[in-house]
Length: 143
Image (cartoon, rainbow, N blue to C red; front, side, top):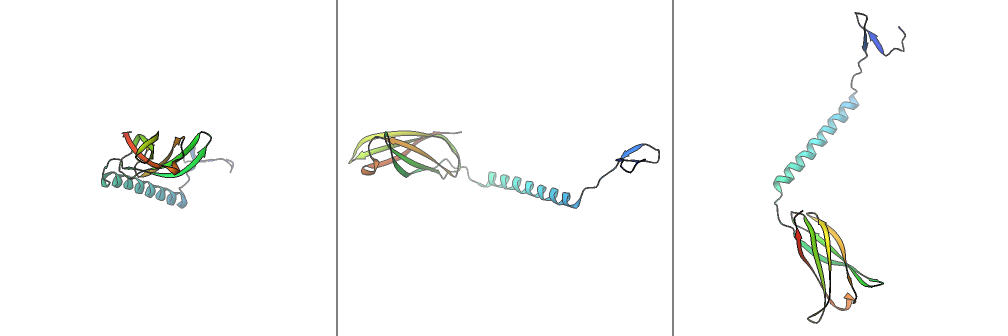
């Protein structure tokens, strides 16, 4: 038998594959992977049972106002501080001069996860900086 053969002969003369043992590095990596998996699953279970299920709590704020070729773009930030996600969040913006509404605009945020923020924009033909701008979340649906 040549030394380059990958098989060793047993007592009966048959070929038997050579067994390689698992190295200590492989055992350490496998152990760390198992610990990481257990920690992740534990966190998810604890989070699922300890966090109160509160409805979406959407607040809106103006991020920027930009001039566009068609008028003005008001970029807003929608924050959801609640414990549930919201889908199809309807946002409206009103420009008021004195107590009179002079222009309105609407946008929809497709998905707003719990404890997160998204940005959107409202287009106006009049300059919002010289008027009172009111932003309001009008409704949502459950995802």
